[in-house]
Image (cartoon, rainbow, N blue to C red):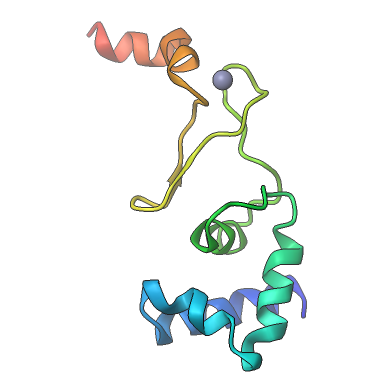
Length: 106
Ligand SMILES: [Zn+2]
């Protein structure tokens, strides 16, 4: 299964099943190939990430770890609720950001 096919399958599954049942669905034999492709295309992610994060990366063409824009070293957190990555790794880097500084001071 290539990336394009995987995207199509994931979109179908996410339409068919409610968010909380996607993982259960992916564990079914009929989706074995989808599940294997999903893990292989997102193998750059850490092992303990959520299934939503893996699906998000496939659907949004993310092919490498999302790094903090300040230190460029640490991975940023993925927020399931808003389906987005933080720009910064931690409060220290957040504090160093001129962008945040400008917003707070204006
Ligand atoms: Zn950082």
